[in-house]
Image (cartoon, rainbow, N blue to C red; front, side, top):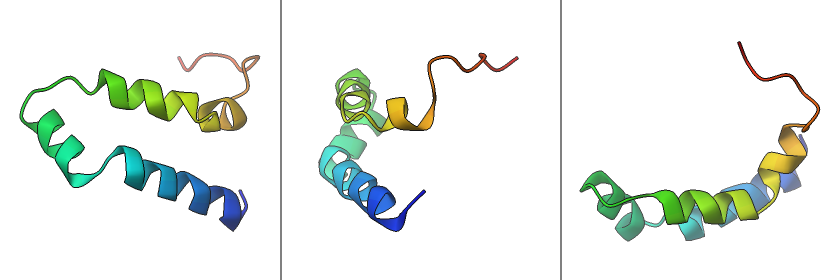
Amino acid sequence: MTDSLLEGFERALADLCNDDAVRRSEAGDSAAQQWTAIDALGYTDAWFPWNAAAPA
């Protein structure tokens, strides 16, 4: 993975998972909205091909 791709992902995570959001999740609030936003970034599609076998 290139550094620029990793840096972009890190910046996006910093925005989506700021201190307040993490504290709410740790306090018991659902993190589903954060996970949806992270998935919408498209990095999971780039890293894990859809034709790959599911882990056993």
